[in-house]
Length: 159
Ligand SMILES: Nc1ncnc2c1ncn2[C@@H]1O[C@H](COP(=O)(O)OP(=O)(O)OP(=O)(O)O)[C@@H](O)[C@H]1O
Ligand SMILES: [Mg+2]
Image 1: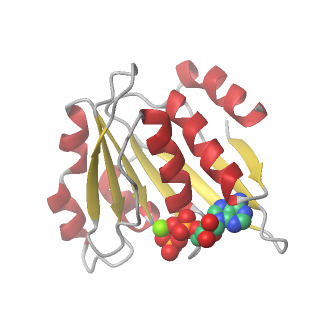
Image 2 (image 1 turned 120 degrees about the vertical axis):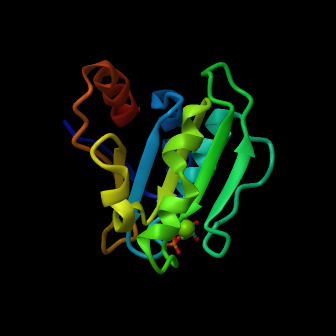
Image 3 (image 1 turned 120 degrees about the horizontal axis):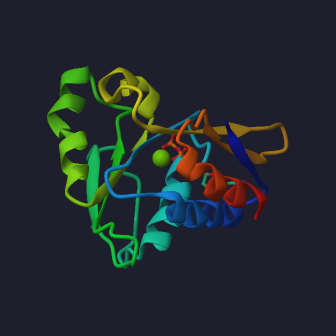
């Protein structure tokens, strides 16, 4: 099943992110894909708000990964925010060892994640960002198989 939301402004994109935080569980790796400027970082800013990150979340394009402490009752203590747009080789992504990092009650959101999808395998959430001719974004959570998450995602798509 796939679930989507239309976001007509950056405020909407942020809200979609903060409400998506409720769907997350510790250990999740989320691959975000969409063209330059499609709204990936904006969405992560919303997720960060939903996870109770206090500090400002900015694009990790040049640092590859930033870590933010979270304050929530979801059992998620760290948000790992990555951007693999500029990495040269998949080894660089492997070196980040995101799969291991998230095991300790973290989640990872990876911008341009599709570029490194082969590293993460099938056990990821995939979120796509589409921009239409009026600049409206459609944010789509793709091919979710886990029955336990479908109800939450349906609620997410309908709010
Ligand atoms: N739904 C929306 N409607 C209009 N503008 C939006 C929407 N969502 C985000 N934006 C704006 O689009 C611009 C680019 O957003 P953002 O930096 O989040 O994109 P990105 O996908 O992370 O880009 P990059 O590929 O460079 O990492 C920002 O100015 C942001 O405010
Ligand atoms: Mg970005």
